[in-house]
Length: 380
Image (cartoon, rainbow, N blue to C red; front, side, top):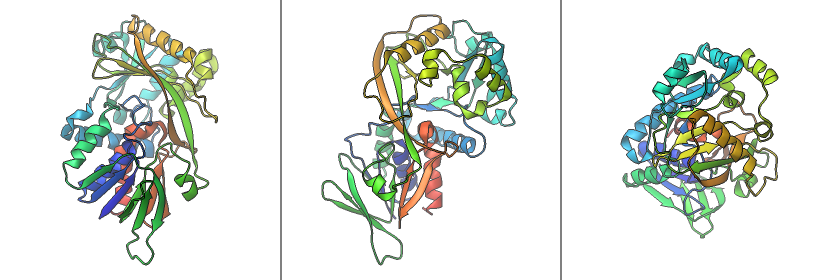
């Protein structure tokens, strides 16, 4: 079988990985010279802890397993089973963490509520003031800026993979009279690529060809701001979140969370920008820190300083020390299903042609399992 994958981000690349692993030939087409969207502009977290139960958690846990397997074969991914800590302060935040640990699926997530002293034994860089922490042993991390590069190198070694960058797909057309449903893909270089299956993994690019194929696509775009520091000078042994992440992730829904929201509102800046703290250390020692959420179009074209100041204050309160110099600030956009309970939007848009988009902030975490499900459903 010959599979055409449109999109060079992590969702597209994992579909290419699944197809090559199953013995198929793959042509992957990317409109940029390298993927430049949400697949690079993220934390690199394999984030199990906050996922909703049921399909979302099952997908995240399966993806976590697949990431570890792939990481063993592709060391350049920088896969690290580091877990995460969410420090808590005060009775209300503690109660939300307690409710999380009481969930029936807490063991599957690796949840444990630990004291501040135990948290500092796990992550000695957390010298600031807090009373306890929610530990999630199943969380992990990879290097988002380089993951696709290393995955592609491994794919090329198979001899059944071709990457075509700098080409925008303009048309997808069914081949009439075929019994197997192959399609052709035409790019803006005038070249036509024929495949037995086509997967459109176009991320947040929802206009142009995607709009023509699915005019009423139930997917929206979300914008966020992030930043990265110079090397910390010591090891941050886990990823770190703050209690505002309880308000954002569905795993933490509980009566205790309702009380937290009612009695302990977010700081005004955090509320205005729908913020939480997530922080991961990169292999060079720098910290990736975020983030904000903007849902209303048109998005701003610039970044705002107030959210960065808020994040800096929160991080420094956990580390008990000043942040290193901020070296990079950026904004990114990802695609999210308008029904946020859905893991991904997977739709057959023509004979032999599937659109896979909208995983939201789950894209980096869940992409290996999303691609595996597509391959199984398409009978690869």
